[in-house]
Length: 185
Image (cartoon, rainbow, N blue to C red):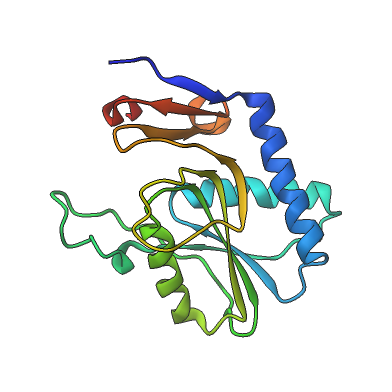
């Protein structure tokens, strides 16, 4: 087994998040009729952090915010060896007529984003849906889904795994590339 390879250190990690926030501010201004929705679980961690940074960078002008559980919208939830653990959706608003920014940490096959777009329809018909991810793995898409806002692009093969670590959870904010998914635990 190879040791994990650091692809983004703490300093660059924070710069990448701030760049994404500045892109959102540039494109959505005062966030009128805009909502940011983190996909549970790891996308919600990223979206929490983005909301904190937006408040600091944009003088507390932020979009409506929610977290979306897609567990039962996934196309593979019946095909797992262990039952999936459901999170909870926390959205006290409808997306009808709004611009939605979906957030997840890593874009790989596109299946999670596909499930999120299906789930979001339960909250109305959005005018527009954009997608923000911290890491775009680029290869092995199963759906024609792309990121509108991307932190970094990493070209990897199937056997590798991208792990996003957060200071408040793992002790340090960084992004690692692992050759064995079992090293992620």
